[in-house]
Image (cartoon, rainbow, N blue to C red; front, side):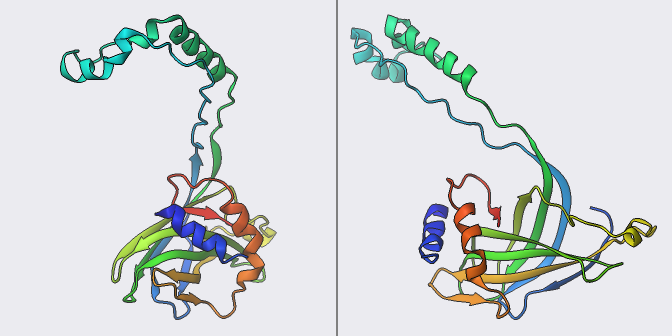
Length: 232
């Protein structure tokens, strides 16, 4: 289902204490709460290709599945594993696994936003941004934009969960560093675009879809795993 939602999207391309506010800008997706925390994410383990030789056809192999289901005790050994080809394939898999580099944990930030669908239509795709305005220097605003594939029925709430290597701000002024209160930023959630199951779209008037076209293509350019949202 998520793959279909993202495919339709691609076709359209052709924490410490903070001061908080939010803006749903007239959308039917109401923001009910939000927060961010430091986080560490481990990417999904890379699959080791199975390029070893096929197991030989032996007599036990012909009725192995039947015997396993009806007669063999739980955990019975696959007879293919005892053939020359079977042992060769197991050895080859071990070698491939040792040579396949596995992803390392990535330090970053987790962003969570609870929203409620106040419309009578099912929400399928959400674009939102988590804004950080530096209190000591209001002209400094960091925007972390995300694309989420969801399925939110009318009147239902959902927590959008996103991960990014980018935190609240790339640069903090000297005045902020000297602030002893701990309130460095004013936080704000902005809903930029909502796509519904019936094909209709709501979009914030000051947000330009064309400006993030390349970012969307990058975010959806690899298979979508268990994650709900991706950073733009």
